[in-house]
Length: 123
Image 1: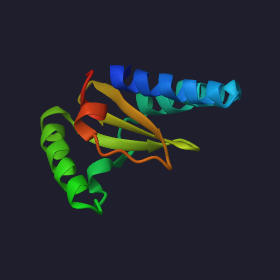
Image 2 (image 1 turned 120 degrees about the vertical axis):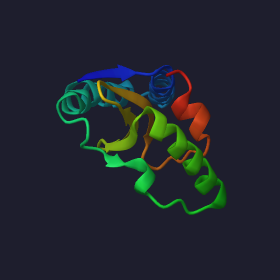
Image 3 (image 1 turned 45 degrees about the horizontal axis):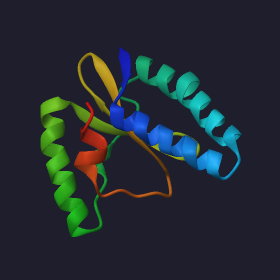
């Protein structure tokens, strides 16, 4: 199975790299990049279903619930949205029959409510 990095995922990586440059610790980004390339992508190529289905999580606000319902409708058309945990980051990806598309990446302490723009644009 092939793994595709969406434009949104690449933009998030660029923002993460800028953060590590700003705090003058570029090795932080280098470690993340290596973990994505050598661990996450390799595993998702072989075991694309290994991530937890993202929509199984219970949203704790009304806005998050509404956005998850919208994402669920889109996921039924395109595949299963899953989350893959790295050491300090969470990758959201969609698994279809022949490709895994990496949608977004966030530090596990970050949250996002702009589901459609961040995770579904640039696909």
